[in-house]
Amino acid sequence: MKDTGPRRIRGVRRILNAREGVVLLLFFLLALFLSVRTPTFLSAQNLSNVARSFSWIAVVVLGESVVILTGGIDLSVGATMALAGLIAALVLQGGHPVCLAVLAGLAAGMGVGYVNGTLVGRLDLPSYIVTLGTMSVARGIIFVLSRGWPVRNLPYTFRVLGQGYIYLNALMIPVPVLILLVLTLASAVLLNMTLLGRYIRLLGRSAPALHVSGIDIGGLKQFVYTFSGFMAAAGGLMMTARLGVAAPTAAVGYEIDIIAAAILGGGGLTTGKGTIWGVLIGAGLLHILRNGLVLMGVHPYWQTGIVGAMLLAAILVDSLPLKTGEQHG
Image (tube, rainbow, N blue to C red):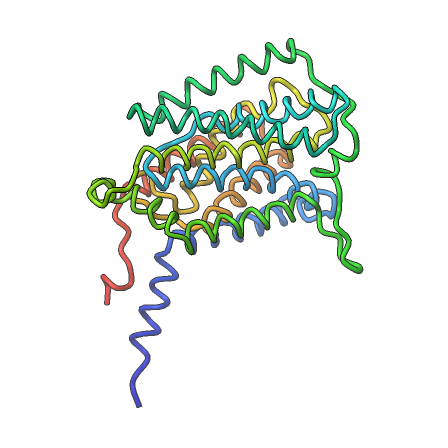
């Protein structure tokens, strides 16, 4: 009988050395610590709030992770979230139906993404400079359209996207969680089961190989950034629906959390690696960390510093070679 011991050992090593496995372990350890440290962490109300707010952040992280897979970065996601929410709110304020408001918000996000993709892909400009610029432009448009005032009194038919439930017998599933599941599956299919997904991953590892093969790299980058804009808009609509107000200062500073979550989940900055599930784990880790810091009464300034430190740590770890079980074996 063939000895399967070495094979099992190599399998365990792969699990232990995988980025997703490490982040998942940290996730459970942090959740265990918070459940002991703060009695409200495991309360039904807190877990419900965490699940809802995690949903819109995770959706945006999915889009950001695809950009990072290509070796780029999108700093405009927070502003895009706020812009999409505001556009939808203004359309609703004009008496138009919810479906039109949602489409307008998504179109605004895709427009920002398309501009990013065109400047990065067609003009070969640095992604961090381009998206920093579009972030400022989007924020300026937000304040011009809103005149600095939040848009309130959004109809419940829109707010259900962030506050509603889907009832399956005795099971209540929050609508944002359901939206996240749908978009997660769509993203997984895109990256893992389509030729386009293979091109996206290869773009982060070896762009010259794509160029030699005759692939339109500029068009590919346009798609990637437009996809990121779409996901940021979707997250922004969910956020606005949850809060019930479109504020011009919404999602300020979210970029750090989103980028940190994408990198923590395994999205290498230049290597075309990472998985959808790893990205979700990274987003979950960052989100319960934020929630735990709030429950423990940590000052908001320190919260931002801690998340920034985690981002630096994730980048440092990402820059180190990660040995696999195959290399050990």
